[in-house]
Amino acid sequence: VSGPSTAANPRTTPALQIPKVTMSRQPIYDAQHRIYAYVLSSQSDTSAPYGEEANSHNVQELIYYTFLETGVDRVTGPHRAVFRLTRGLLLMDYALVFSPDRVLLEIADFAPPDHELTEAVEELKAQGYYFVLNLPPHDPDDYHELMSRVHLLNIDLTLWSRPKLQDYISHCRQYPAQLLAT
Image: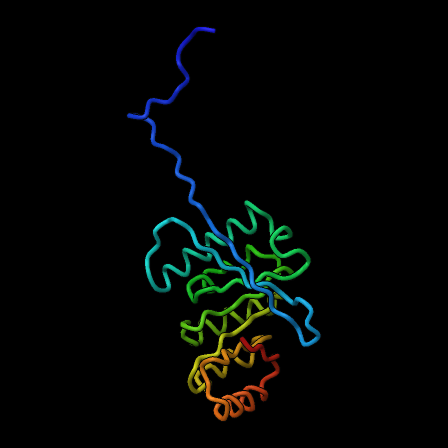
């Protein structure tokens, strides 16, 4: 067969760059040791900025690969997926790309608990979304408004001495949310 070459000219055609993405999932168990949900995370070979912008970039990439490329059912089966959303992503209604019955929205612990964020959580909660709040390793009173609205309070056990942890847990039990220890 003869005719014009269909090979791309490397000098004029840019190469399509598809990033390599590694996705991981970590199970969250309930009190009966059954899988309740999976915390999803990803890492890619693309360069991302630092701080909240990097977290937003990683979350957007994770959402793309979980929901569009792979499919959430292949990643989590019948269980919910936990996505850590930054303040910016929550305020942009980024959560609306998810079906409320398939996800738990984790509020990143560096998100300032201001009125605007609390209102966004309240609106999404009214639409059926469930929230996890990573508690800070200091006085949780600054997070009172969020703590009273979320479904799960995540306490990092490694950040506390035993006596202070017991006081912290006692304080958290005044809220309607379930406690999650990591």
